Image (tube, rainbow, N blue to C red; front, side):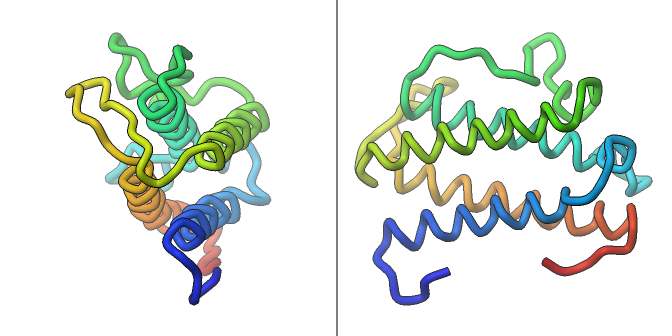
Length: 160
């Protein structure tokens, strides 16, 4: 990660580092391990986190920032926790969907300036791409902390 870069390069590099960290935490585990709710006091699993981050990428970059009209993949008003609770479906497909959403987000970022604006669908408030990148970095950082605990509980792996 560059330490002497401009604002845009720094923000993108930090987000990519967090995405890569998340991918490393999920690496080399099968469906059962990824879907295990390994911390007894929590309903979180790596599979659920993967689904949650997939919809987070889609929600923020595609729907709210770019104004695309695409459905969320794992969320509905009828089942708002489906991303974490409904661990059906193939894990390889879930990984592919996450990577595809990250690719969509990268393309949106590449085509926009940090001062370009999106509109929050729930409040109607505008936000800049700069804010969105910071928000997404914070979201991944928070969830990477969860993935550290989950991965260690699954197989003892720490670090990355």
